[in-house]
Image (tube, rainbow, N blue to C red; front, side):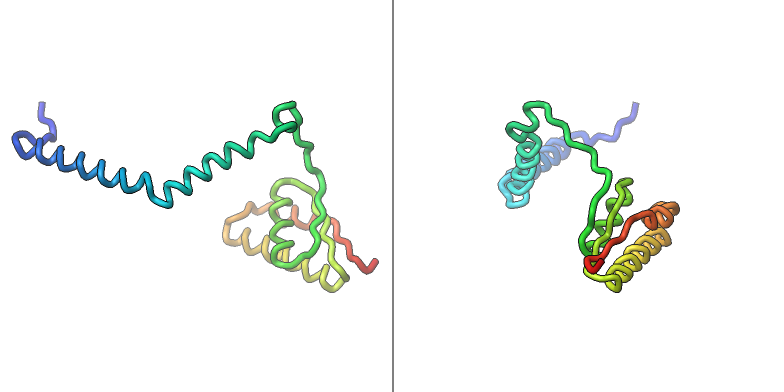
Length: 138
């Protein structure tokens, strides 16, 4: 049986050198800022999943069926798209009908662009049109 091993004194030297290098690099990485940040994120995620008087008494979140998005600009249209993807009905609210139409067009353009780049499914275009729209001037 042939195996791909290094035999002889060079094998031992190579193995020891590799192990020493690995220990050295590990010791540097374990105290790095990146390592400390990752540990902090890990414990923060664990902490937020345990909310006193909420998660420990068995409360369950209610399902969201409809969400109002105030403002149809870049951020509002992005939020609307994310909600539509989650099968949540969206009510888009703007201060007047001009801004409302612009917000609807922005949302539809973002959806069409994402569909054409194949980042979103084809059927989302029709789905994005199934939302309510309101203005503050009515």
